[in-house]
Image 1 (tube, rainbow, N blue to C red):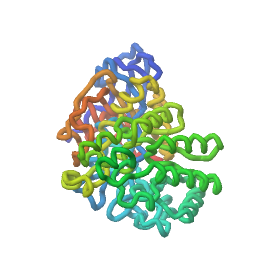
Image 2: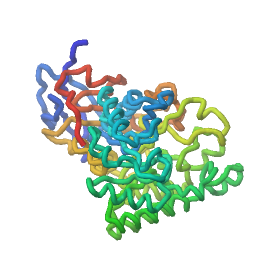
Image 3: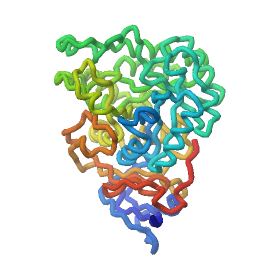
Image 4: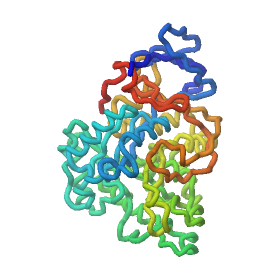
Length: 448
């Protein structure tokens, strides 16, 4: 296949600060920003009237399932879903089979991402061997590998032993790493199915109390303070958890936190349907919790939005609630949900979205080539969204290999128009294209 042109002039855009502007891309970088840019003969002109351009989105929490669970997702299919959702970099969680607890596995995942050519795929290493919560994994070897892992998590499981957690926090200090904790006290959540409350009681489903999350968050911010290390809290869901993070930051503790799009929009009321599509870990909480999460994201207590994209094959969801797997798709709908819950409600500006979905996640993970400003000379990692256009979610049209989106049939506001990765439109006009179909100037690897 002959290489396509990789120079572009994007017209009709609005920058995150509200300035109307065109934008020119050549050789993988932004070459001009302004209202009257003259197109070159080799430019492909793309009219994006009415759209907002953001620095390319970065996800710190993605389940790609490969190796070992390719019936749910692969690095390729997950990368395509990410590009369709506006992402240019994603972080592959370690709960694969085999677990990503060695240099060999993380290097395999990293190489698969480079081969796919839709986004940068940065592996997250397991904290403990086999995610068992007992012995530390090969943290140093993964950090020194070609994947240069800097974020470590047993997500799906909590590092419940405080001594193991302390040792992990101490270990990553040597290279500026961060431990991302799945906050779930296992003794309080054995057999739990959904948020503990009136609805769980009425449905006869075992409840998952908010304190099971909050107890681990409180313990771990104190541990992080004690050893002076970096802690990141995955998928925060409770009003109490927000207050603990707010308290910790006021004390100067080095903690960051994320919220998922589905926890910004959905509540445990959806469990009334008994549809396992709404079964997720941690569970959907109450309207009070949703409001606290939105407020926390708006005021910076919660640092970032992360998808917790969790694909599952049909048989894992099309069954009784108690037998169903936990998890939801997230990559393709995340920006729309943030637009609907945070921008249209006046809680965040587009500059705020750029911070929570690009700049800060890149900073937390140390992805040096991502999360930068939209300026001349910067790498052309870009996301373009039409914030006023609505669409109806259709699970049969997703790029993911799985179909377990809780938003099927819902109308969401904000449509991703284009994703540019290393100056190449990996998603444009409804079409997905690998950077390998373009000129070699866009094919250099990205560093962390």
